[in-house]
Amino acid sequence: MPRVVHFEINADDPGRASAFYSNVFGWKIQKWDGPMEYWLVDTGEGEMGINGGLLKRSCPEATTVNTVDVPSFDEYEKKILAVGGTAVMPKTAIVGMGYMAYFKDTEGNIFGIMEMDESAK
Image 1 (cartoon, rainbow, N blue to C red):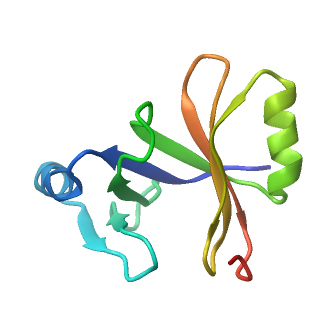
Image 2: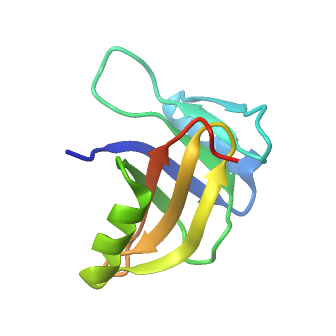
């Protein structure tokens, strides 16, 4: 069953947001060495929870985005659109990781789906 595996916090000022979450929750936030400007968020170990990321706001509606791991991007995109969801950000390759996109559900909430695929370019 697909599960939420990642969250993202969209920010106008990623540095300011990183400082905020680090100071409030003690999260470890560090800039990623990948091909895009992105910060990895480590929320801790040994307890229930997930880690995430922080990035410069890419679409005006995005606030906090939960991303669901899916076995087939194309299959789940069709399911989302068939039941009234809408695409907010098109399918994007995350080099060496997989394919992802943002959608809006029937209530106006933004969420992401990601198919892991190390051959993504």
